[in-house]
Amino acid sequence: MSIYDWLKSLGIELKHHQLIDDAFIHSSYVNEHKEVKNDNERLEFMGDAVMQVWISDRLFKMKPQLNEGQMTTLRQKIVCEATFAQVMRTMGLNNFIKLGVGEEKTGGRNRDSILADCFEAFVGALYLTNGIRVIDKIFDPVFKPLLQHPEETGIADYKTKLQELVQSDVRKAVSYKLIKETGPANNKKFTMGVFLEDILLGTGVGNSKKQAEQAAAQKALEKMVK
Image (cartoon, rainbow, N blue to C red; front, side):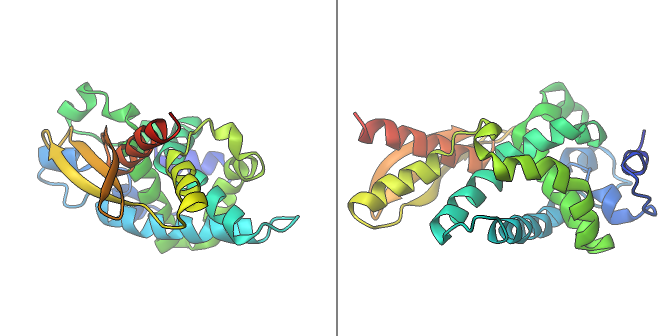
């Protein structure tokens, strides 16, 4: 089954388009197939922006109305790597990703960072080729329950919890900085630090910067609540 067959099973018939094909091409696949020109990294940029606006629109229209803080917290919980990876698995979209042999062997098809990036790329490609309505039709059914019951994502949003704890005390924002990047291109490890002004609160390691930020926030929370 191709991605177009999958879309057709949802009642959506789209013409073949290079951007939609590119959305599922990981950089490791391009490295091993010189005839393939594009990976999905530029499309990730577009998809991230689309999802920020798309989820914000739904949160803004929720009844009863949410205040700014509530909308921000829910958006951070839903527009994140873990949620996007979960949606990819739930919908079976991970089956369409094209990976290099090495990435496939090391479990890339089930790695949150790769799945989330691919999800964003797919959303970006859909938006650029067919507009927002097709995104509504495909993803409303899966995101609607998460918007109504965000606790069902099973995702611990340590970054939000840390920010809320810090603001309740000193009313200042924390920031995240890359401390170290190691490993080969197909299996990078990122070490991120979370800072309050110049004070290092905690560090965390992950396969993506977002994952490492969550780990750093978790470490900081563990220290602060002791």
